[in-house]
Length: 309
Length: 309
Image 1 (cartoon, rainbow over the protein chains, first blue to last red):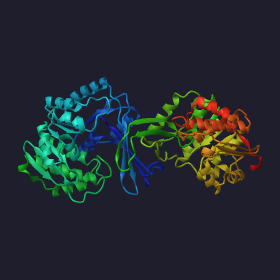
Image 2: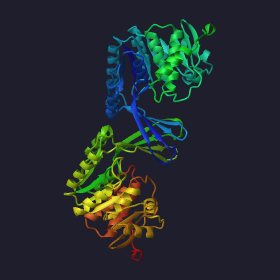
Image 3: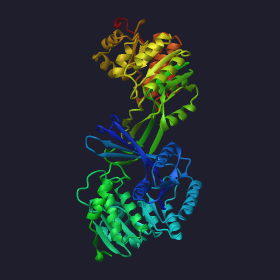
């Protein structure tokens, strides 16, 4: 199975309002709610691609129960979330129906105790025993040490399980030094990590910091990869309109599935770009339009950039 | 006991953010959550005044469970909420720490089936048997007939239980025609009901529409009452700064407690005004500062307005 780790899972709530006007009262016209957090989105896409996936991380309180109930019905996903005393956070996305814009409110997440963090690491070590690959995704909840991802990367490497890291800020900075197989920063995360806004230079810097392969998701400019085997670029298909939330998570799913299927890098990138674009066309993160994906997969062009390495 | 009815109970969530900027992403710095809905606020204030209170209405789903768990610890309140298949709504108040302003997002509430509405009416009829007074509070959830409050007012009157109605719009228009003992509209609700923005005239109209007594809450101008026994005015104490949410609910609690204690109208109004003002000084609806209440109670002046009747 493929393991995805979401330490700060979330119950993702979406509110539709006619028009968001600060400091007034709004009637919410439509409420949707689903299990969220980057690793859970990755898991849904992997499951839709036909992989067996196990999700772990933390879940607790009333929202944790709702989140875990929501995972029950998803074929191909096994729930190995570790209980916490605190309450799983909510995220609220307020969609303004008059403009289509979204205003996001993210709760910080439960306070994780040292004992709970230790219990997670034990569960994680056990799960690595049957994992073909692992993705470490998203922010850290309060209480989890900022070097958490470095610890989890080292454990995966000690168990010879390929590990992909998708986070930002200091957890990325610490985690990358533990030499993950793949990091997948977006343009902002890459610039924050390296201080450089020039992707090629920043990606070389990220490799020097410890990542074996760096795949940067550059929004409408698509993906660029710098790996031990070479460098490639895969532009995004034209006309990306829709909801970009989850596009990066779908790229992670594409890269990870390509990894366990031992695809060459150009095919991994083509899959990741096509999945990302097919996710932008879907209403929510963690879903993609299968027909769009199949069509785009045959259209994506991956260019060798031998000079970049 | 005093019975309060909240057909559209809510889990009231408050988010503090540094500054609300539409169409951006926000880290919520503080999350609080408590059982809400106008009748539940009224019940908390009545319980704090030493009355035995029973709360009814609907509760369902995960948020319903959290709401009912939150009532367990409140002394003096008995939970007689009726289960529904749908999920109790949330309300989200986003407090902008830079300005103190609040942006409110209110979910519509669960869809109540005809069988659930019938089950509620049966429970309500039973509860009326031991009620000294009943307050009918707030909006109606989807599925409950717009004439619901008229039905509930008639049942209370048939059981000789004094009934106070605090709602708005069409449910108020229909409910007032069933001749409740007291209605407590605010200025906007009164104007919407009667078409008049002149309180004295609008209150006479509201009595003609069926209310035995009309108590209008006019914000900083305090309360005005038009009753079979006379007309009175009680201005709000000076310097009302704080959170006005729940001030109207505290006024309802003051009026209802005065009613069951058989206080004369001027004392009921003094209590209602003092409770309202003491609620504005408290951080959340359904709570009031006891010392402020005691002090204000002795300061409030109630003026006879014999001419207004």
